[in-house]
Amino acid sequence: YVNTRGEWVIVPEYDFACDFSEGMALVGMADREGRIAYEVIDREGQNVFPVMLTNCRLQGVFSCGLLVYKDLRQHYCACLDKKGKTVLYLPAEIQEMTEFRHDVAFCLTRNGVGVVDKAGKMIVPADYDDGEFINSERLALKSKGKWALFDFKGNRVTPFIYDKIYPWSHANRVFVHQDSMDLLIDETGKTVSMVYPFELWKQLLPLYRSFTVTRSRRRLKCRNRKTRYCQ
Image (tube, rainbow, N blue to C red; front, side, top):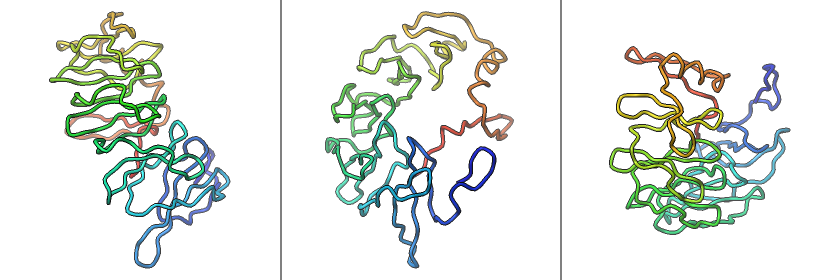
């Protein structure tokens, strides 16, 4: 691990390492047979706790004080706290889940995508096709090809009318795509203005202070460092 000046903070000794989040990082070292023993370290590289799990897939980063994992043998999802103790077991029907943001997480069941809180309670039924976190006040869910905004209590605040709701916002405004137009709406769904491509990128670039750009089939793709995921 290096700091923003490119100086070594934690020397390279791990075979597996995730980004730091909430002051902690998941790392691992492999034995001669390739089996990885995981632990959580602090910013000084000191061991916080060893991960005492087997046959599990770890989400990678702490969020809202929890580290999500899935038991691959018994097929359930659960969460570790910052002391390494399993403090939350999700209902059996949940097959997969994301990390928590703003104390909620998306989950996947046989019926579809829903939203659970930190108590494991389903606050949005798993009846949807897809989901995105938008900002600290709103998330988006997709049904039958259209998107709508929801609050974090599970209340729908717009109709399912958008072709796309982009997973970022600016100044409490949300960028959406509807009927071949890019629009800027407020958090109640009221249209604030139309957004043209150049104006859209001008508003977004401050959000991408550190990014990489790749070219694929004449398209440019930006990837914010915060959108990296580890499994």
